[in-house]
Amino acid sequence: MTALSLFNIAGTINSLFVLFSIYGVFLQLTLIWQRAQQHCSSTTELLSLNQFTVTFFAYFSFFVYGYSVEPFNHYMVWPRLMACCLVFLILFEMFKDRNQLRVRIVFGLVGISLILGLIGLLVGPKVADESHLISTVLILTVSGALAQGYWHQIRLIVKHGKTGAVNIKMNQYILAMDFSTLFLAYTMGFENSWPMVVLATVSGLTKAIIMYLFRWVRISPIAASRRQVG
Image (cartoon, rainbow, N blue to C red; front, top):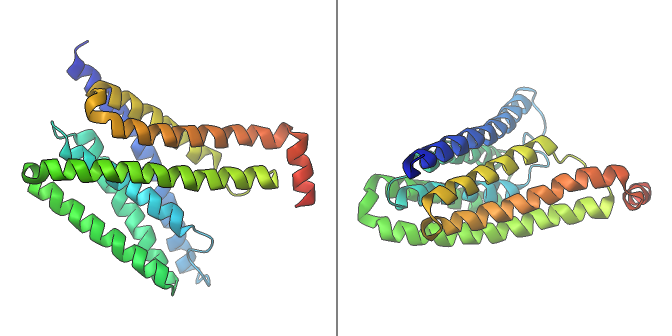
């Protein structure tokens, strides 16, 4: 099997798993719209602004990275652009639902980032070096934000001895996507793909820990005692 064939296989698999994660985002968006039709007091109640902001920039960083490498990586660019647009719509719903300065600032920052990213896509090779540097810094920054955000989630599960509203299937889909991203990175060569490896590894490790905690809360006497206290 040639390197090009292996790359195409890895890219196709990764795109499929990204589409699974996009489907999950779409389900979240449709739930918000359903709540609007039901005239709920808050259409985005309990949705984490931090989570969806980091989620946007995780997709966005791979989107920019995909068109800043040689050759242009269609497997990374188009599915991530679709995901960015859907998460942007969720943030727009938060913007409409919540009269908070923080939400307005985040929505503006995300909107400007998406516009600049699309301009970079249109300009293409003329700013390839700058786009590559920006996307690399962005990926590493998002990796740190993901680690912090999911570590907080892990601590909450351990502290309360229960998983609450955490969805195991979504974590499974994202973990599978992370594995496929590592496979795609392998076919691209570590010199070009090491930022992808960092983000996918951080994301995968946190998802694996959370999935283990689903078993821990069922079998651990410590978890049972903490649920009783809570």
